[in-house]
Image (spheres, rainbow, N blue to C red):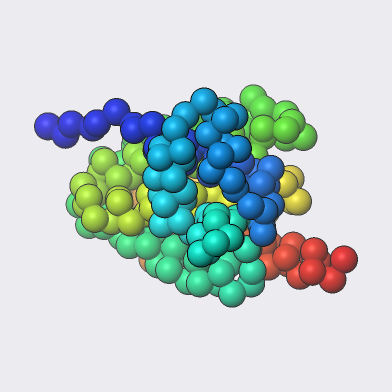
Length: 227
């Protein structure tokens, strides 16, 4: 049996600030002032300070002496570094899933993908929160895979990457709304490969989507830099 402690106040603050960074409400280089956040959320400065340390570990902010906390930059170098390892970790997750379970036993994966498709079908792709809903639904499929693989170290590592990858994913979805349907197609192909026990196809699908998303984000960053 696994026991999960309720989220601490610092974790809740970190999630709140982190979501503002992911959705670009807080921009790269913008300062995050402890006193201001403490007053806005009616919490202690100590809790805010702990939350900022959490965000620093998740690579969403940087903390400098005398300058304080600043939203970290999103550069081609950081994007490439992130996707280099994240794609490999997703391939490992898929491979371990097929090592533990046969395709016939993975019907639940297809069910999770159908739920994601229902989310996409129900939302207005031009809505302000469309990107956030798609990202949350996509991670729901991943969480289902965690339960099948039962590797706490792999799960923890991927979850630690979640805020940073959500940030780049949001950038892609906001600029290329057709990526919402591309996401649905990716998860359908993923589920089909899993159910058919095709490890080679599963890895190819993950790598192709990851590289496609990497290039979308890099294109956006280049366009913003030249604007």
